[in-house]
Length: 164
Image (tube, rainbow, N blue to C red; front, top):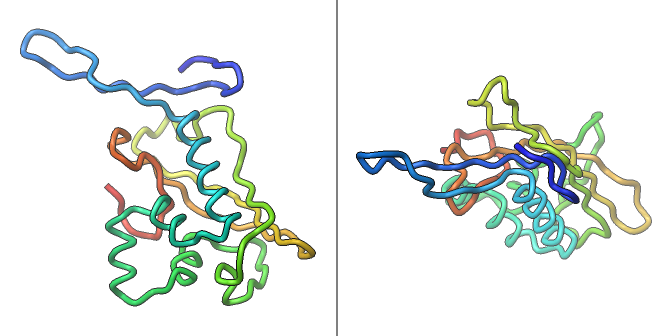
Protein backbone atom coordinates (compact mmCIF):
# COMPACT_ATOMS: atom_id res chain seq x y z
CA UNK A 1 0.00 0.00 0.00
CA UNK A 2 1.24 3.48 -0.79
CA UNK A 3 -0.07 7.05 -1.13
CA UNK A 4 -0.69 8.31 -4.67
CA UNK A 5 -1.65 11.92 -5.38
CA UNK A 6 -5.22 12.10 -6.69
CA UNK A 7 -5.91 8.45 -5.81
CA UNK A 8 -5.33 8.17 -2.09
CA UNK A 9 -3.81 5.13 -0.45
CA UNK A 10 -3.49 2.68 -3.29
CA UNK A 11 -3.30 -1.01 -2.57
CA UNK A 12 -1.30 -3.14 -4.97
CA UNK A 13 -1.71 -6.87 -5.38
CA UNK A 14 1.19 -8.80 -6.87
CA UNK A 15 1.05 -12.35 -8.15
CA UNK A 16 4.31 -14.22 -7.89
CA UNK A 17 5.11 -17.45 -9.71
CA UNK A 18 7.59 -20.10 -8.66
CA UNK A 19 10.00 -21.21 -11.42
CA UNK A 20 11.61 -24.01 -9.35
CA UNK A 21 14.43 -21.64 -8.31
CA UNK A 22 12.75 -18.51 -7.05
CA UNK A 23 9.56 -16.50 -7.04
CA UNK A 24 9.30 -13.84 -9.70
CA UNK A 25 6.68 -11.17 -10.27
CA UNK A 26 4.06 -12.41 -12.72
CA UNK A 27 1.27 -9.80 -12.62
CA UNK A 28 0.36 -6.72 -10.62
CA UNK A 29 -2.96 -4.97 -10.20
CA UNK A 30 -4.36 -2.32 -7.91
CA UNK A 31 -7.60 -1.86 -6.01
CA UNK A 32 -8.35 1.84 -5.51
CA UNK A 33 -7.64 3.07 -9.04
CA UNK A 34 -9.44 0.11 -10.63
CA UNK A 35 -12.43 0.46 -8.31
CA UNK A 36 -12.72 4.18 -9.08
CA UNK A 37 -12.71 3.33 -12.79
CA UNK A 38 -15.30 0.59 -12.20
CA UNK A 39 -17.61 3.05 -10.41
CA UNK A 40 -17.14 5.66 -13.15
CA UNK A 41 -18.05 3.24 -15.94
CA UNK A 42 -21.05 1.92 -13.96
CA UNK A 43 -22.25 5.48 -13.39
CA UNK A 44 -21.91 6.35 -17.09
CA UNK A 45 -23.92 3.30 -18.19
CA UNK A 46 -26.64 4.02 -15.65
CA UNK A 47 -26.87 7.75 -16.43
CA UNK A 48 -27.21 6.92 -20.11
CA UNK A 49 -29.98 4.40 -19.36
CA UNK A 50 -27.87 1.57 -20.79
CA UNK A 51 -29.04 -1.03 -18.29
CA UNK A 52 -28.09 -4.08 -20.40
CA UNK A 53 -24.58 -2.74 -20.81
CA UNK A 54 -24.35 -1.98 -17.10
CA UNK A 55 -25.43 -5.53 -16.22
CA UNK A 56 -22.95 -7.07 -18.67
CA UNK A 57 -20.16 -4.95 -17.22
CA UNK A 58 -20.98 -4.99 -13.51
CA UNK A 59 -22.45 -8.45 -12.85
CA UNK A 60 -20.68 -11.81 -12.83
CA UNK A 61 -21.25 -13.27 -16.32
CA UNK A 62 -22.29 -16.74 -15.13
CA UNK A 63 -24.73 -15.35 -12.55
CA UNK A 64 -26.24 -12.97 -15.10
CA UNK A 65 -26.66 -15.77 -17.62
CA UNK A 66 -28.43 -17.96 -15.05
CA UNK A 67 -30.85 -15.19 -14.16
CA UNK A 68 -31.60 -14.43 -17.81
CA UNK A 69 -32.32 -18.14 -18.41
CA UNK A 70 -34.79 -18.00 -15.50
CA UNK A 71 -36.66 -15.28 -17.38
CA UNK A 72 -35.74 -12.32 -15.18
CA UNK A 73 -35.88 -8.93 -16.87
CA UNK A 74 -33.17 -6.28 -16.61
CA UNK A 75 -35.38 -4.42 -14.13
CA UNK A 76 -35.76 -7.59 -12.02
CA UNK A 77 -31.99 -8.05 -11.94
CA UNK A 78 -31.40 -4.39 -11.09
CA UNK A 79 -33.78 -4.82 -8.15
CA UNK A 80 -31.61 -7.73 -6.97
CA UNK A 81 -28.50 -5.53 -7.14
CA UNK A 82 -29.85 -2.29 -5.68
CA UNK A 83 -32.00 -2.32 -2.52
CA UNK A 84 -33.58 1.00 -1.45
CA UNK A 85 -32.59 2.13 2.04
CA UNK A 86 -34.77 3.48 4.84
CA UNK A 87 -37.88 1.69 3.58
CA UNK A 88 -38.25 4.03 0.61
CA UNK A 89 -40.94 2.85 -1.82
CA UNK A 90 -39.52 2.66 -5.34
CA UNK A 91 -41.74 2.23 -8.42
CA UNK A 92 -41.63 -1.32 -9.79
CA UNK A 93 -40.27 -0.08 -13.10
CA UNK A 94 -37.74 2.33 -11.57
CA UNK A 95 -34.84 1.08 -13.68
CA UNK A 96 -36.91 0.71 -16.88
CA UNK A 97 -38.13 4.29 -17.13
CA UNK A 98 -35.09 5.91 -18.69
CA UNK A 99 -31.82 7.55 -17.84
CA UNK A 100 -30.79 9.26 -14.63
CA UNK A 101 -29.42 12.78 -14.31
CA UNK A 102 -26.89 11.58 -11.76
CA UNK A 103 -25.67 8.31 -10.29
CA UNK A 104 -23.24 8.77 -7.41
CA UNK A 105 -20.99 6.02 -6.10
CA UNK A 106 -18.71 6.56 -3.09
CA UNK A 107 -15.48 8.47 -3.61
CA UNK A 108 -12.94 6.09 -2.14
CA UNK A 109 -9.45 7.04 -0.99
CA UNK A 110 -8.34 3.61 0.23
CA UNK A 111 -9.33 0.01 -0.23
CA UNK A 112 -12.77 -0.72 1.22
CA UNK A 113 -11.80 -4.33 1.85
CA UNK A 114 -10.74 -5.43 5.32
CA UNK A 115 -7.13 -6.25 6.14
CA UNK A 116 -8.22 -8.10 9.26
CA UNK A 117 -10.30 -10.62 7.33
CA UNK A 118 -8.54 -11.08 4.01
CA UNK A 119 -11.13 -13.64 2.94
CA UNK A 120 -13.88 -11.01 3.17
CA UNK A 121 -13.93 -9.63 -0.34
CA UNK A 122 -17.36 -7.98 0.00
CA UNK A 123 -18.21 -4.40 0.79
CA UNK A 124 -21.57 -2.61 1.12
CA UNK A 125 -21.93 0.36 -1.22
CA UNK A 126 -24.44 3.20 -1.03
CA UNK A 127 -25.42 4.58 -4.44
CA UNK A 128 -27.52 7.71 -5.02
CA UNK A 129 -29.77 7.90 -8.09
CA UNK A 130 -31.25 11.23 -9.28
CA UNK A 131 -33.78 12.09 -11.94
CA UNK A 132 -34.63 15.68 -12.92
CA UNK A 133 -37.43 17.06 -10.75
CA UNK A 134 -37.46 14.07 -8.40
CA UNK A 135 -35.93 13.42 -5.00
CA UNK A 136 -32.74 11.39 -4.81
CA UNK A 137 -33.11 7.76 -3.89
CA UNK A 138 -30.30 5.98 -2.07
CA UNK A 139 -29.77 2.28 -2.67
CA UNK A 140 -27.53 -0.29 -1.03
CA UNK A 141 -25.58 -2.78 -3.14
CA UNK A 142 -22.90 -5.28 -2.26
CA UNK A 143 -19.62 -5.00 -4.10
CA UNK A 144 -17.45 -8.08 -4.52
CA UNK A 145 -13.81 -8.28 -5.45
CA UNK A 146 -13.22 -11.63 -7.07
CA UNK A 147 -10.94 -14.05 -5.26
CA UNK A 148 -8.68 -13.89 -8.30
CA UNK A 149 -8.46 -10.12 -8.94
CA UNK A 150 -6.44 -10.74 -12.12
CA UNK A 151 -9.51 -12.00 -14.02
CA UNK A 152 -11.30 -9.86 -16.60
CA UNK A 153 -13.79 -8.63 -14.03
CA UNK A 154 -11.94 -7.67 -10.87
CA UNK A 155 -15.13 -6.28 -9.29
CA UNK A 156 -18.82 -7.00 -9.64
CA UNK A 157 -22.04 -6.52 -7.73
CA UNK A 158 -23.40 -9.46 -5.78
CA UNK A 159 -26.76 -11.03 -6.54
CA UNK A 160 -26.82 -13.26 -3.48
CA UNK A 161 -24.77 -16.04 -5.09
CA UNK A 162 -21.25 -17.20 -4.35
CA UNK A 163 -18.86 -15.62 -6.85
CA UNK A 164 -15.49 -17.24 -7.53
